[in-house]
Each structure stands twice: as structure tokens, then as C-alpha cells.
Image (cartoon, rainbow, N blue to C red; front, side, top):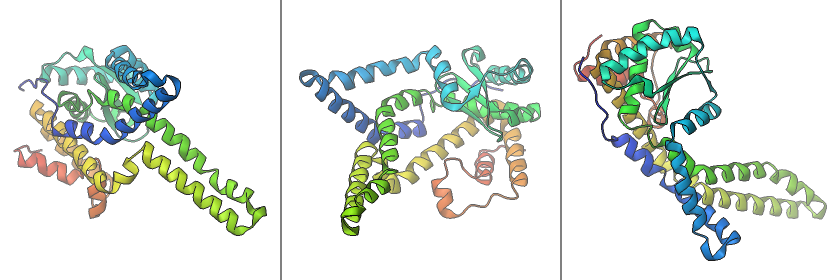
Amino acid sequence: MSGERRSWPDLSAVLAVVLAVPVVASSLLVLGLAGKLAWPGYFWVVPLGWVLAGGVTFVPAFEHFLLPLTFGMRRPTARELARLTPGWQAVCVAAGVDGDRYRLWVDRSPALNAFAAGGRTVAVTRTALELPPPSLEAILAHELGHHLAGHTRISLYVWWLELPARLLTRLVRLLALAVPYAGRAFAAFGRSVAVLVTVLLTLGILTALAFLDPWLLLAPLLGPVLAWSKRLGEYRADLVAARLGYGPELITLFREWIRAGGGDERRMWARLLAGHPAHVDRIKRLKDRGYRA
């Protein structure tokens, strides 16, 4: 099997960054306003400092500290590691990369799944660990494909830049839960007053949400584009795994998932908004490239 060297980020990775611009801009604007209140003459220091501080996301120690807290991962047990290591090393040898630079984790989810994150993280679920070695290797090769294609390298940094807007969005959404109670508090002044207060508060909260998270306004237009970019990333990771020699195993695995799920039918709108392609589409893509089970 020929080695697969690290390449420049592909279209999926570039689109993910471009589509994050509205939320990142909101975060920097929020930080700029906070800086204006705290330090009017040098308000730009706050957003600039946040951007520079995000460099910590490229430090492996920070990644290995943050991701388990964020995604609920845990370290593999000795038995799980003994099952993971041979397959992972085989995949990395095929790709011509150093497997020791990556950290393997176990996702607590009971679903059959795996994911790559940051610059050095690969996680599999407990259910995935029960797969036969060839299928487990194929999944690991797919996740390594995400790393090699640059899909995850900048993801933590983008997450950091979006964090202020995301946190404030959650706070505003929590405040939205109090709107009905605030309206009732004015019921003593008449039903029309209570309705007016509720409407005004609702409009204020919607305006704040649109300011903090422009995706709420852009989602109907950009949501399908973001989903399409994610599907491109999945196809690319499949192709990387296939080039490493795991094409037949991937096709077999996708067919087993289709049988286990009783089919793979999706409505058109579901296909447009799905971040993962249908298994039948992934099989077709691999076959179009000449891979067979």
C-alpha cells in the first residue's frame, strides 16, 4: 500500500472556515464592545488578545485537556488499547505517518461511531471497538483521512474564536425562557399590556440572537452549503482510507450498516441537510474510483 502524505486542506476544510466567519465576526464585535466599556481608548486589545490567546488550541496538551471535557471522551482501558493499537499502527504505517503523535480515546456514546478532532485526536465508541479488526482498521483509516486532509487541524481554533458569541447566545436563549413569565407579571395592567410586553421582549431577544449568531438568519441559505461541505469531507476521508488499502473493507462496512438499518432511504431535504452522506452514495463514490468489496 502506498503512503499518504499530509496534504494542504481541501475544499471541505476551507469552506468550514469560510462559513464560520459570521459567528467569528460576532464574537470579535462582542469582545470589542466589552473592550469599549472596560478600556475605551484601547478597546481593540480585547478582541486582539482573544485571537492571539487562541494559539493555545494548537498546543497538544491543551487539546488533550479540552476535548475529553467537551466531548465526554475517556482514556482507553488496557484491554481497549490492546485492541486499538495494532490496527492504528497498521493504518499509520500504510499512511507513512507517526502514529504516536496522535492520541486515541474512547467515546462514551453507545452508537457505532468514530471521529477525529483537533490536530491529534482520534476517538472511537465502545461499539466500534467490537468490530472485526479489518472493519475497525477501516474506520481508523477514515478518521486518519480527516487529519491528513486538514479537516480538523483548525477546528479548535475556530471553536475558540466563536466561543464568546456562542456563550452569549446560550445566555440569551435562557433569558428567552423567562419571557412568558415576564409577560404574566404585567397581566395586572391588562391583557393587552401583557401581550405588548411579551412581544417587545421577544423581538428584543430575537434581535440579540441575530446579532450574536448570524447563522440564525443565514442558516436557511448557508445550512445546506455547510452540510454539503461536510459531506465533501466525508467523501475525501473515505478516499484517503481507500487509497491506503481499506476500500473493500469500507464498502463491506457500509453495506452492513445499510442491512442493519433496514435500508438507506432519505428524503431530498434530509439529504441536503445531512452532514454525512448516505451509505449508498459513499459506496457509489468508492466504486466510481475503482474500488470493490
